[in-house]
Each structure stands twice: as C-alpha cells, then as structure tokens.
Length: 340
Image 1: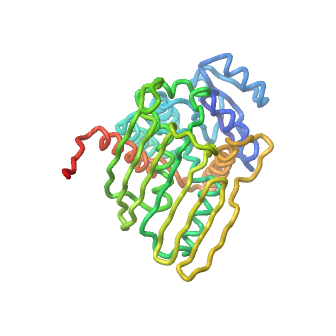
Image 2: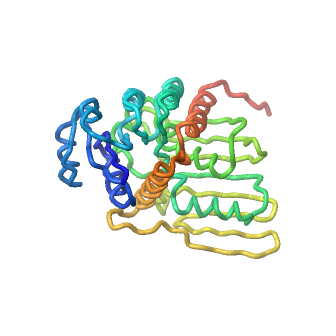
Image 3: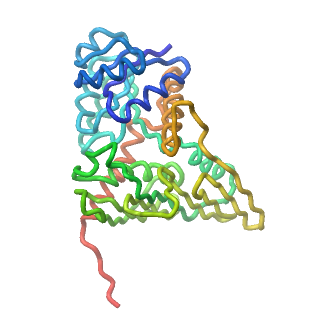
C-alpha cells in the first residue's frame, strides 16, 4: 500500500481526496495546510486524523511514499524542492507546474537530482471522451491526420468558486488553455511553431478570457486550440472539450454531450456515446473532470508502484508549459497587418 499525504486542502483538493479513496493500493494518510480551519474541515470530511500546518513537521513525522500537492502555483517550487530534499518521496503536483519557466525547470531538476519521481496532475487528457479520441486515432480510424481542432467554449461562472481567476494577471491560457494545449500535444504530437491571439471580453475581470492558437506540429499536422469563458450558448457545454480530426482516410468529431462520430472516406460512418462513467461522489457537469482526476490518480499510483514515471511527468509537462509561455509571447507581440 502506497502511503501519501495531500498538501493543500482548498477548493479542488476534495476531488483529489474523493478519488484517492478509490485508488487500489494507495491511501492518503496525512493532510497539510497552513489554514487550520480548512485543514480541520478536510480532516473531518475524509476521516484523516493526522494533520499538519507545517510541511517540515509532516515530513519529519510521517513515513510517506508520495505527496500530492494541491496548492496554487505560487507555492509549487518551494514545496517541491522541500519534499525533494527530504529524499525518497515521489511528488505529484497540480497544474500549472509553476508561475515561470525558470521555476518549472528548477523543480524538474531538483527532483532529478534527488532521484524522486515527479508528475504533474494534468487530468484533461485522462477524460473518457479524450481517451476515446486517442484510441480511435491509434486504431487508424481516420488514417494519417493532417488537421485538428480542440475547442473549449463556455460562459460558465467559474469565478463563483474560484474568485481569484477574476483578479489574476493571467487567466484563461494559464488556467484552462494549458489543459487544451496538452490535449493537442497528446493527440497531434509536439508543436514546432504557433501563433496566438488573446482578448478580454468580460469587463469585470482583469486578464484574458478568450484565446485562439494556430499551431504547426512537428509531424505536419496543423491544429487550432480555442478557449473562451465569454461564449454564451443556448446549450452550455461546460466543461466539455470538443475535438475535430481530419485525416487521409476520414474524419472524427467529438461533439457536444460526448457524441463521437467517425466518418470514413469510403462512406462508412459510426457514432458512439463516450460519456464519462458516473461516480457516487461526482455531480454533473463537473463529473467529466472529477472522473478524469480518478483516472489520472489510478494511473499515477500504478506507475509509482511499478517504478515507472507517469504519462504526465514533470519533464513531459515542461513541453505543455512552454506552449503556455509561447502563447502569451505571441499574443503580446507585434501583429503583421495584411494590406487590402
């Protein structure tokens, strides 16, 4: 049995804790948070009696196989380096990995130097419909892909549960776009170049709530990633990511409400329901994300038990985080005008 500790008992941590209860051969045995009230609430809800307001105290008192860091990105580097220096404890850390590329690279280096596994909790690629898209592509459903689109458009009030999203200097690319960019990497491969625009539509927030990215992948695929929290639709799709893939032998569409359609150039068409599986602690519409948390954690625990790095290792996630930085640089750079 892998024994773990959760660091950070805020808004999203409850999903981690629910999911860890359903992970075979792993258990959260201790909690750590600097806020005593938040710590006590999580302890009572999940019946975890060993609690700490100090990371150092917890590391000194507990014999741990892993920690799961569910705090904000400003704290990630210090926490990861502290755990890595303790030695022998695998580290799982929420996204985004850090606030800067320098911090992210330092975290990966610290874990490598200490010889401890390091993974980022990147769960969107673990959503059931996204895994179904990947599986269909690997089976050759559309032949060789040449175009893709990953689209997340919504007007869902994310600020109600996460008010800091309205005041942070960066918003949709760093908080949501990082997931969609990772999906594009997962489906279409590494990115060779990109061009991006961002926009703030909602006047009540500080940063961008719309982003559009055109990417050229190293294998020749062209993809578009588009994200919006300013798109009011007659049918709210939150938190669904829609996907399009055009290939040499056909097309694939992951449409609203988990409808996966594959149309072959020879005329054959198949339609499948790839909805997420229900969980007794998950509730629509967030059940799509909650189920992917469980899928990620199950895989991470299995990898740690087998001595393998999880799919979204720190090293792998640096590539997704680099795309986030590139999007901001492109959006802030000079635009080339096309004269009529």
